[in-house]
Amino acid sequence: MGNKQSKAAKADVDEINERTIRRNPIVQAMDKKHQEELQNLQKAAEKRAEADESARSRQEKEHQKNLIALQSQLDQEADSRRVAEEQHREAEQKRIKAEQEAAEHAKQAEKAQRARDDAVHAAEKARKAMEEAEHRAQNERLARDEAEVERKNAVLSAEEFRDRERSARDAALKAEEARAKFEKLEEKARLTGEESEGQLRTFKAEREKTEKELAKARRREVQLAELQPVHEPTRAEHEQTKRDRQYVEGRLHFAIAGVAGSGKSSLINAFRGVSKGTASAAATGVVETTRTIGRYEDPHPDRSKFVWFDIPGAGTTNISNSDYFVKQGLYIFDAIIVLFDSRFVDTDITILENCKRFNIPSFIVRSKSDEHIKAIADEMREALDEDESEDEEDVRSKEREARRTRIDADAKDEYISVTRRNVRENLRKAGLDEEQRIYLISRRTLLRIVRGKQVAPTKLIDELELIKDVMAAIKERRIDPPVFKADPAKSGAYLNPFSWGGWGRR
Image (cartoon, rainbow, N blue to C red; front, side):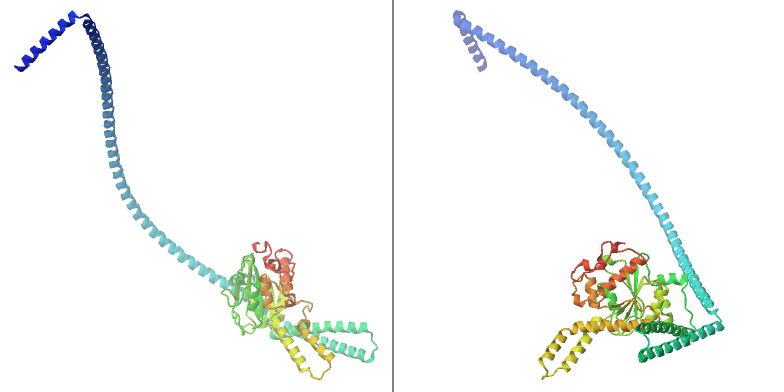
């Protein structure tokens, strides 16, 4: 009821306003303008509505299109999942089948491996049996070769030996007679003074020649008396000796031989640049420490091709002097150093003779020279002290002091001259080359040289010459090392001949 009254009141107001507008032209114009604006706004609203409707329609179409594409993608993914699941199932089935087949193959492989192991074991057993058979056959061949050599050596009849022995005795007798004759002539020449000095020299030369022939005849007589013909190693023995000595082709093998206690191990250590007592040093001692042949490689990389052998001294083995060279296998070495300390014995002579026979460079070396020189110098000082007198003249005192300052040099000169004279006499009596050089060395000095240390000239004797001549002999025999130019005033690698460039890499 209230609404009806409100509507009626509004209608009355509108009617009053309409009458007012019809009666007022200004109001009518404003109303008209207002109506036009309302129409324009309505048209703009309709256009916006139409544009919104069109955009909404497009969005709905795009949305519908996206829905269709999404559905298609979902369908494709579903198809892909189904295909992947099927492939996974197939792959799983194949994997299980492959595992089963692999397990079967593994069983078969294990079975085959056991069979192969059995075959390898059988082959190894057969190889060892074959090697043992070959070794036995080789020993048999060696025994046959030795027997053949002994048989050939024994072919010489007792009559031939007697003839040779008779010839040797005749030669010795003639040599003795000739020597006695020359001695008489020489004595007569000295007493009467009728012969000239030139004739005396001739007699002396002929006497020395006769003594050489006499020495050879005596040694030959001894060999014939022992009935021990010279043993020539067979080819099989030569190869077996190389294997026993661990001979390596392309390397240089040096043997140090000599009587027991001559200092062979110490000399090997010095040549290798090793001090005694170190892990790689050869054993040394006052008594002979080497009962078997020792093999020592050089630890320095520049001298890696050098191998040194310590040969047991005579008297430490059950080998006679005549068999010593061959039984010890010295004929395989590239150079042999015959070392002696205080005496030159028959074994040394035998080694030198065989070196000449087998064309192997040999070097006569006396070790411990510094100790011998010191002993001579001590004796000289002691003699000089005993000769001293309190009431002697100042001149004699000054002379004695001058002699005291020269003792070391005089002792060195005396040691060198006496040693070389004695060794030459031994060589001459043995019928060998008495001009062969004798090297007098000190182990300590040689060690310093090899290590490249500086050495005082007063300490040097023949160490540098020994190294140089050994290298020269090896050069002539097998290889071509650089020329060694020693300078005792300098130290370092220049003085060390074993560190020449390229030598250790040959």
